[in-house]
Length: 277
Ligand SMILES: [Zn+2]
Image (cartoon, rainbow, N blue to C red):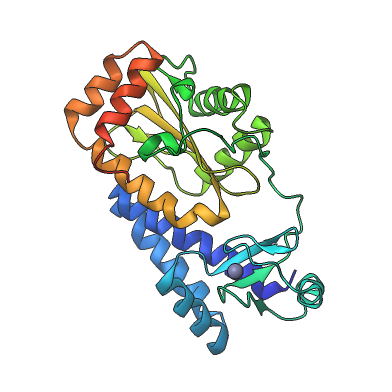
């Protein structure tokens, strides 16, 4: 991969984490994130920096992986000569359709399967990416790793994703950068940039609470989210919608009191009706 592409991917990851932290209102990490973003932006050449900043004004994803022979965000089929040039990695190329910078991923793509393509009537709100089968009212895990595992394996059992092991590993890698816990007892562990399937959300409640970071208050409602690259911008809206719905104490209490998955699902659908379109 072109070294600058690698640099931009890491920079973009930091800007996405900063957006999450803003939604989480976790000011204590913002200063450090802003400083790192500033340093990394300053290391780019003027042209690349201007392109990156211009693209990010429109959408958080300024650089995207090629998926098969297509741009993973807009889906444009790329000419073979362009695909080859991107693989060669001698310079950074842009998608002819959406103008995002493109790169050929070196690692095996984080495939999560195709089974999330659901049929039936068009769904609205939260039911587009979750289901009552993905609600766990009483998480058994006593730490973040086991809770994330329970949620990831539930997604796999229910046929929403494949490779739950890899998802747990990736989610923990993300937690290690900056915790996804909010101050009000919510946590949003997630895996970004997966291939195949759609955005998927599983929710678990820990009555006792689990600590997502040392010296922090325990998290009680854990939203585990798997995010394809194309849904990165929508994910931030989802995060903000969930955060808004559960900033109301009575909504959190209703979820915490529930023991039946179907009822938990009904509460989730009700409280997010106006915050998640
Ligand atoms: Zn594109």
